[in-house]
Image 1: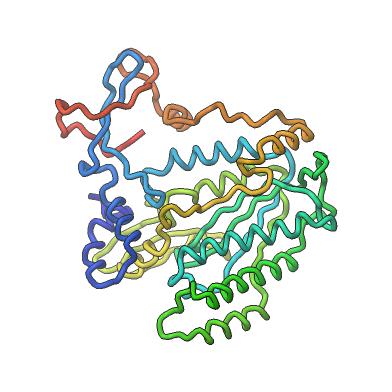
Image 2 (image 1 turned 90 degrees about the horizontal axis):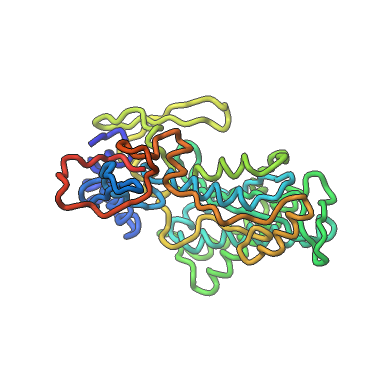
Length: 383
Protein backbone atom coordinates (compact mmCIF):
# COMPACT_ATOMS: atom_id res chain seq x y z
CA UNK A 1 0.00 0.00 0.00
CA UNK A 2 1.32 3.44 -0.97
CA UNK A 3 0.06 5.93 1.61
CA UNK A 4 1.09 8.85 -0.63
CA UNK A 5 -1.95 8.30 -2.80
CA UNK A 6 -5.63 9.01 -2.24
CA UNK A 7 -6.28 5.26 -2.03
CA UNK A 8 -3.44 4.66 0.43
CA UNK A 9 -4.56 7.53 2.63
CA UNK A 10 -8.14 6.22 2.70
CA UNK A 11 -6.99 2.68 3.46
CA UNK A 12 -4.95 3.97 6.40
CA UNK A 13 -7.33 6.57 7.79
CA UNK A 14 -10.94 6.20 6.65
CA UNK A 15 -12.10 3.57 9.15
CA UNK A 16 -11.06 5.67 12.16
CA UNK A 17 -12.44 8.86 10.59
CA UNK A 18 -15.81 7.21 9.98
CA UNK A 19 -16.11 6.26 13.64
CA UNK A 20 -16.04 9.90 14.75
CA UNK A 21 -17.86 11.63 11.87
CA UNK A 22 -21.39 11.38 10.47
CA UNK A 23 -21.09 10.88 6.72
CA UNK A 24 -23.65 10.60 3.90
CA UNK A 25 -24.05 7.04 2.65
CA UNK A 26 -22.81 7.93 -0.84
CA UNK A 27 -19.51 9.22 0.59
CA UNK A 28 -19.03 6.01 2.57
CA UNK A 29 -19.73 3.86 -0.48
CA UNK A 30 -17.41 5.97 -2.62
CA UNK A 31 -14.57 5.67 -0.12
CA UNK A 32 -15.06 1.91 -0.04
CA UNK A 33 -14.89 1.73 -3.84
CA UNK A 34 -11.75 3.86 -4.00
CA UNK A 35 -10.06 1.68 -1.38
CA UNK A 36 -10.84 -1.48 -3.40
CA UNK A 37 -9.81 -0.07 -6.79
CA UNK A 38 -7.27 -2.32 -8.53
CA UNK A 39 -7.02 -4.72 -5.62
CA UNK A 40 -7.87 -8.40 -5.43
CA UNK A 41 -11.21 -7.46 -3.85
CA UNK A 42 -12.52 -6.52 -7.32
CA UNK A 43 -11.04 -9.50 -9.15
CA UNK A 44 -9.09 -9.24 -12.37
CA UNK A 45 -9.14 -9.55 -16.15
CA UNK A 46 -6.79 -10.83 -18.84
CA UNK A 47 -5.61 -9.21 -22.08
CA UNK A 48 -5.19 -11.12 -25.36
CA UNK A 49 -4.08 -10.32 -28.90
CA UNK A 50 -6.11 -11.19 -32.01
CA UNK A 51 -4.45 -14.63 -32.11
CA UNK A 52 -5.32 -15.36 -28.50
CA UNK A 53 -1.89 -14.90 -26.91
CA UNK A 54 -2.12 -13.91 -23.26
CA UNK A 55 -0.41 -10.56 -22.63
CA UNK A 56 -1.00 -10.14 -18.94
CA UNK A 57 -3.61 -9.90 -16.24
CA UNK A 58 -4.66 -6.92 -14.13
CA UNK A 59 -6.82 -6.12 -11.17
CA UNK A 60 -10.13 -4.49 -12.09
CA UNK A 61 -10.81 -0.79 -11.57
CA UNK A 62 -13.61 0.63 -9.43
CA UNK A 63 -14.67 3.08 -12.19
CA UNK A 64 -15.96 5.60 -9.67
CA UNK A 65 -16.12 9.14 -11.04
CA UNK A 66 -14.07 10.43 -8.12
CA UNK A 67 -11.27 7.85 -8.30
CA UNK A 68 -7.96 9.46 -9.33
CA UNK A 69 -6.23 6.25 -10.41
CA UNK A 70 -8.65 4.76 -12.95
CA UNK A 71 -10.11 7.82 -14.67
CA UNK A 72 -7.63 8.57 -17.45
CA UNK A 73 -9.42 6.67 -20.24
CA UNK A 74 -12.87 8.02 -19.34
CA UNK A 75 -11.52 11.59 -19.21
CA UNK A 76 -9.89 11.11 -22.61
CA UNK A 77 -13.11 9.71 -24.05
CA UNK A 78 -15.07 12.71 -22.77
CA UNK A 79 -12.54 15.09 -24.30
CA UNK A 80 -12.72 13.31 -27.66
CA UNK A 81 -16.54 13.48 -27.66
CA UNK A 82 -16.57 17.14 -26.69
CA UNK A 83 -13.99 18.09 -29.32
CA UNK A 84 -15.95 16.21 -32.00
CA UNK A 85 -18.89 18.59 -31.40
CA UNK A 86 -17.02 21.89 -31.28
CA UNK A 87 -17.82 24.48 -33.90
CA UNK A 88 -14.99 26.05 -35.87
CA UNK A 89 -15.31 29.49 -34.33
CA UNK A 90 -14.26 31.48 -31.31
CA UNK A 91 -15.39 30.23 -27.92
CA UNK A 92 -15.85 32.08 -24.65
CA UNK A 93 -14.99 30.68 -21.23
CA UNK A 94 -17.04 32.00 -18.33
CA UNK A 95 -17.08 30.89 -14.68
CA UNK A 96 -20.18 31.30 -12.48
CA UNK A 97 -19.34 31.10 -8.76
CA UNK A 98 -21.56 30.84 -5.68
CA UNK A 99 -20.81 33.17 -2.75
CA UNK A 100 -19.23 31.46 0.24
CA UNK A 101 -22.19 32.49 2.41
CA UNK A 102 -24.32 29.90 0.57
CA UNK A 103 -21.96 26.97 1.15
CA UNK A 104 -23.65 25.83 4.36
CA UNK A 105 -27.03 25.61 2.64
CA UNK A 106 -25.36 23.53 -0.09
CA UNK A 107 -23.94 21.07 2.45
CA UNK A 108 -27.42 20.37 3.81
CA UNK A 109 -29.02 20.26 0.33
CA UNK A 110 -26.34 18.87 -1.98
CA UNK A 111 -28.51 17.44 -4.77
CA UNK A 112 -30.94 20.35 -4.81
CA UNK A 113 -28.27 23.07 -4.80
CA UNK A 114 -26.23 21.32 -7.50
CA UNK A 115 -29.24 21.10 -9.80
CA UNK A 116 -30.28 24.67 -8.99
CA UNK A 117 -26.81 25.91 -9.91
CA UNK A 118 -26.97 24.18 -13.30
CA UNK A 119 -30.51 25.45 -13.92
CA UNK A 120 -29.65 29.03 -12.95
CA UNK A 121 -26.63 29.22 -15.25
CA UNK A 122 -28.41 27.50 -18.14
CA UNK A 123 -31.52 29.70 -17.92
CA UNK A 124 -29.39 32.84 -17.56
CA UNK A 125 -27.58 32.05 -20.80
CA UNK A 126 -30.80 31.17 -22.67
CA UNK A 127 -32.46 34.39 -21.56
CA UNK A 128 -29.61 36.45 -22.97
CA UNK A 129 -28.55 34.59 -26.13
CA UNK A 130 -32.16 34.40 -27.32
CA UNK A 131 -32.35 38.20 -27.03
CA UNK A 132 -31.73 39.85 -30.44
CA UNK A 133 -29.86 42.68 -28.74
CA UNK A 134 -27.08 40.16 -28.11
CA UNK A 135 -27.53 37.28 -30.56
CA UNK A 136 -31.06 36.06 -31.25
CA UNK A 137 -29.83 32.55 -32.03
CA UNK A 138 -28.80 29.30 -30.37
CA UNK A 139 -25.06 28.78 -29.68
CA UNK A 140 -23.26 25.63 -28.55
CA UNK A 141 -22.70 25.45 -24.79
CA UNK A 142 -20.89 23.08 -22.43
CA UNK A 143 -21.39 23.45 -18.67
CA UNK A 144 -19.24 21.58 -16.14
CA UNK A 145 -19.46 21.63 -12.36
CA UNK A 146 -16.48 21.92 -10.04
CA UNK A 147 -16.94 22.01 -6.27
CA UNK A 148 -13.36 22.79 -5.29
CA UNK A 149 -10.75 25.50 -5.42
CA UNK A 150 -7.17 24.56 -6.26
CA UNK A 151 -6.30 24.29 -2.57
CA UNK A 152 -9.20 21.80 -2.19
CA UNK A 153 -11.45 24.13 -0.20
CA UNK A 154 -15.18 23.94 -0.93
CA UNK A 155 -15.85 26.29 -3.84
CA UNK A 156 -18.80 25.29 -6.10
CA UNK A 157 -18.75 26.92 -9.52
CA UNK A 158 -19.68 26.15 -13.11
CA UNK A 159 -17.38 26.51 -16.10
CA UNK A 160 -19.17 27.55 -19.26
CA UNK A 161 -17.77 27.10 -22.77
CA UNK A 162 -19.95 28.87 -25.36
CA UNK A 163 -19.52 29.41 -29.10
CA UNK A 164 -19.18 32.97 -30.43
CA UNK A 165 -22.30 32.77 -32.55
CA UNK A 166 -25.28 30.53 -33.12
CA UNK A 167 -27.94 29.26 -35.50
CA UNK A 168 -31.13 31.33 -35.75
CA UNK A 169 -34.67 30.10 -36.48
CA UNK A 170 -34.16 30.51 -40.24
CA UNK A 171 -31.09 28.23 -40.17
CA UNK A 172 -28.56 31.04 -40.65
CA UNK A 173 -25.38 31.48 -38.66
CA UNK A 174 -25.42 34.69 -36.63
CA UNK A 175 -22.54 36.53 -34.98
CA UNK A 176 -23.03 38.29 -31.61
CA UNK A 177 -23.49 42.04 -31.66
CA UNK A 178 -20.78 42.45 -29.02
CA UNK A 179 -17.19 41.24 -29.13
CA UNK A 180 -17.61 40.01 -25.56
CA UNK A 181 -20.88 38.32 -26.58
CA UNK A 182 -22.86 38.77 -23.35
CA UNK A 183 -22.34 41.52 -20.73
CA UNK A 184 -20.82 40.14 -17.53
CA UNK A 185 -22.75 42.49 -15.20
CA UNK A 186 -26.10 41.51 -16.72
CA UNK A 187 -25.20 37.80 -16.59
CA UNK A 188 -24.29 38.17 -12.94
CA UNK A 189 -27.53 39.92 -12.02
CA UNK A 190 -29.77 37.39 -13.79
CA UNK A 191 -27.79 34.42 -12.44
CA UNK A 192 -27.93 35.85 -8.92
CA UNK A 193 -31.67 36.46 -9.17
CA UNK A 194 -32.48 32.99 -10.48
CA UNK A 195 -30.42 31.16 -7.86
CA UNK A 196 -31.77 33.15 -4.92
CA UNK A 197 -35.33 32.84 -6.22
CA UNK A 198 -34.84 29.06 -6.37
CA UNK A 199 -33.64 28.98 -2.75
CA UNK A 200 -36.59 31.08 -1.54
CA UNK A 201 -39.14 29.02 -3.47
CA UNK A 202 -37.76 25.73 -2.14
CA UNK A 203 -37.86 27.16 1.38
CA UNK A 204 -41.48 28.30 0.96
CA UNK A 205 -42.46 24.89 -0.46
CA UNK A 206 -40.81 23.03 2.40
CA UNK A 207 -38.25 21.41 0.10
CA UNK A 208 -35.13 23.01 1.58
CA UNK A 209 -33.39 21.64 4.68
CA UNK A 210 -32.53 24.57 6.91
CA UNK A 211 -28.97 24.21 8.29
CA UNK A 212 -28.60 23.16 11.92
CA UNK A 213 -29.01 26.00 14.47
CA UNK A 214 -30.49 28.31 11.84
CA UNK A 215 -34.04 29.53 11.22
CA UNK A 216 -35.98 30.01 8.00
CA UNK A 217 -36.00 33.75 8.50
CA UNK A 218 -32.21 33.79 8.74
CA UNK A 219 -32.01 32.04 5.34
CA UNK A 220 -34.42 34.61 3.87
CA UNK A 221 -32.40 37.48 5.35
CA UNK A 222 -29.22 35.98 3.88
CA UNK A 223 -30.80 35.75 0.43
CA UNK A 224 -31.95 39.38 0.66
CA UNK A 225 -28.46 40.46 1.69
CA UNK A 226 -26.76 38.51 -1.11
CA UNK A 227 -29.26 39.90 -3.60
CA UNK A 228 -27.71 43.33 -3.05
CA UNK A 229 -24.13 42.15 -3.52
CA UNK A 230 -22.09 41.44 -6.64
CA UNK A 231 -21.39 37.78 -7.40
CA UNK A 232 -18.36 36.50 -9.27
CA UNK A 233 -18.87 35.82 -12.97
CA UNK A 234 -15.38 35.58 -14.43
CA UNK A 235 -15.09 36.14 -18.19
CA UNK A 236 -11.92 35.10 -19.98
CA UNK A 237 -10.94 36.70 -23.28
CA UNK A 238 -12.41 34.72 -26.21
CA UNK A 239 -10.34 31.83 -27.57
CA UNK A 240 -9.92 31.27 -31.30
CA UNK A 241 -11.32 27.75 -30.83
CA UNK A 242 -12.77 25.62 -28.03
CA UNK A 243 -10.32 22.70 -27.96
CA UNK A 244 -8.09 24.18 -25.29
CA UNK A 245 -10.95 24.74 -22.86
CA UNK A 246 -12.38 21.27 -23.58
CA UNK A 247 -8.99 19.76 -22.78
CA UNK A 248 -8.80 21.75 -19.55
CA UNK A 249 -12.29 20.67 -18.46
CA UNK A 250 -11.66 17.01 -19.34
CA UNK A 251 -9.01 16.81 -16.62
CA UNK A 252 -11.70 17.47 -14.01
CA UNK A 253 -14.65 15.57 -15.49
CA UNK A 254 -13.47 12.44 -13.70
CA UNK A 255 -10.82 11.63 -11.14
CA UNK A 256 -11.95 13.68 -8.18
CA UNK A 257 -10.69 16.94 -6.76
CA UNK A 258 -7.17 15.84 -5.89
CA UNK A 259 -4.78 13.82 -8.00
CA UNK A 260 -2.20 11.45 -6.58
CA UNK A 261 0.59 13.58 -8.05
CA UNK A 262 -0.43 16.46 -5.75
CA UNK A 263 0.28 14.48 -2.57
CA UNK A 264 3.86 15.19 -1.55
CA UNK A 265 4.06 13.49 1.83
CA UNK A 266 1.80 11.72 4.31
CA UNK A 267 3.09 12.00 7.86
CA UNK A 268 1.79 10.60 11.11
CA UNK A 269 -0.44 13.61 11.75
CA UNK A 270 -0.26 15.82 8.65
CA UNK A 271 -0.36 15.53 4.89
CA UNK A 272 1.42 17.87 2.47
CA UNK A 273 -0.07 18.68 -0.94
CA UNK A 274 0.87 20.99 -3.76
CA UNK A 275 -1.26 23.06 -6.12
CA UNK A 276 -0.88 25.92 -8.57
CA UNK A 277 -2.28 29.12 -7.13
CA UNK A 278 -4.72 31.14 -9.23
CA UNK A 279 -3.49 34.33 -7.57
CA UNK A 280 0.28 33.91 -7.91
CA UNK A 281 0.37 31.36 -10.76
CA UNK A 282 3.08 29.63 -8.73
CA UNK A 283 3.19 26.14 -7.25
CA UNK A 284 2.31 26.42 -3.56
CA UNK A 285 2.24 23.90 -0.73
CA UNK A 286 -0.31 23.21 1.97
CA UNK A 287 -0.03 21.21 5.19
CA UNK A 288 -3.29 19.76 6.46
CA UNK A 289 -4.15 17.51 9.37
CA UNK A 290 -5.48 14.09 8.41
CA UNK A 291 -9.00 15.13 9.42
CA UNK A 292 -8.81 18.35 7.41
CA UNK A 293 -7.61 16.54 4.32
CA UNK A 294 -10.25 13.81 4.69
CA UNK A 295 -13.01 16.38 5.06
CA UNK A 296 -11.94 18.21 1.92
CA UNK A 297 -11.53 14.98 -0.02
CA UNK A 298 -14.97 13.61 0.89
CA UNK A 299 -16.76 16.93 0.37
CA UNK A 300 -15.95 16.73 -3.36
CA UNK A 301 -17.15 13.15 -3.95
CA UNK A 302 -19.48 13.11 -6.96
CA UNK A 303 -23.16 12.69 -6.08
CA UNK A 304 -24.40 9.38 -7.58
CA UNK A 305 -26.57 9.55 -10.70
CA UNK A 306 -26.37 13.35 -10.82
CA UNK A 307 -24.76 14.86 -13.94
CA UNK A 308 -21.67 16.97 -13.43
CA UNK A 309 -21.73 18.38 -16.94
CA UNK A 310 -24.41 19.42 -19.42
CA UNK A 311 -24.42 19.94 -23.17
CA UNK A 312 -26.72 22.85 -24.01
CA UNK A 313 -27.99 24.50 -27.19
CA UNK A 314 -26.38 23.21 -30.38
CA UNK A 315 -24.18 20.83 -28.39
CA UNK A 316 -27.19 19.05 -26.88
CA UNK A 317 -27.77 15.55 -28.22
CA UNK A 318 -31.22 16.44 -29.57
CA UNK A 319 -29.83 19.28 -31.69
CA UNK A 320 -27.54 17.22 -33.91
CA UNK A 321 -29.22 18.27 -37.18
CA UNK A 322 -29.03 21.97 -36.20
CA UNK A 323 -25.41 21.51 -35.13
CA UNK A 324 -24.61 20.02 -38.54
CA UNK A 325 -26.32 23.01 -40.19
CA UNK A 326 -24.11 25.33 -38.19
CA UNK A 327 -21.02 23.28 -39.00
CA UNK A 328 -21.84 23.46 -42.70
CA UNK A 329 -22.15 27.26 -42.45
CA UNK A 330 -18.68 27.34 -40.89
CA UNK A 331 -17.14 25.04 -43.49
CA UNK A 332 -17.10 21.90 -41.35
CA UNK A 333 -18.33 18.41 -42.09
CA UNK A 334 -21.02 16.67 -40.10
CA UNK A 335 -20.30 15.45 -36.59
CA UNK A 336 -18.44 12.15 -36.72
CA UNK A 337 -19.57 9.86 -33.92
CA UNK A 338 -18.42 6.64 -35.58
CA UNK A 339 -14.92 6.50 -34.10
CA UNK A 340 -14.84 5.08 -30.58
CA UNK A 341 -11.82 6.08 -28.50
CA UNK A 342 -11.09 2.80 -26.72
CA UNK A 343 -8.27 1.49 -24.55
CA UNK A 344 -6.16 0.56 -27.59
CA UNK A 345 -6.33 4.16 -28.86
CA UNK A 346 -5.47 5.39 -25.38
CA UNK A 347 -2.38 3.19 -25.18
CA UNK A 348 -1.27 4.34 -28.62
CA UNK A 349 -1.70 8.01 -27.66
CA UNK A 350 0.31 7.45 -24.50
CA UNK A 351 3.08 5.86 -26.66
CA UNK A 352 2.57 2.59 -24.79
CA UNK A 353 2.61 -0.71 -26.63
CA UNK A 354 -0.79 -1.94 -27.79
CA UNK A 355 0.56 -5.00 -29.56
CA UNK A 356 1.32 -8.59 -28.60
CA UNK A 357 4.71 -9.30 -27.07
CA UNK A 358 4.83 -12.68 -28.84
CA UNK A 359 3.55 -11.98 -32.36
CA UNK A 360 3.36 -8.19 -32.59
CA UNK A 361 -0.32 -8.22 -33.55
CA UNK A 362 -2.78 -5.76 -31.95
CA UNK A 363 -4.18 -6.37 -28.50
CA UNK A 364 -7.91 -6.66 -28.95
CA UNK A 365 -9.57 -8.70 -26.24
CA UNK A 366 -10.30 -8.33 -22.56
CA UNK A 367 -11.36 -11.55 -20.89
CA UNK A 368 -12.41 -12.78 -17.50
CA UNK A 369 -9.51 -13.82 -15.31
CA UNK A 370 -8.61 -17.47 -15.84
CA UNK A 371 -8.82 -19.24 -12.49
CA UNK A 372 -5.72 -21.25 -13.45
CA UNK A 373 -3.57 -18.13 -13.52
CA UNK A 374 -1.60 -17.64 -10.33
CA UNK A 375 -2.87 -14.50 -8.57
CA UNK A 376 0.72 -13.53 -7.83
CA UNK A 377 1.19 -12.38 -11.43
CA UNK A 378 -1.55 -9.78 -11.15
CA UNK A 379 -0.48 -6.17 -11.58
CA UNK A 380 -2.13 -3.09 -10.15
CA UNK A 381 -1.58 -1.34 -13.47
CA UNK A 382 -4.38 -1.24 -15.98
CA UNK A 383 -4.62 -0.30 -19.61
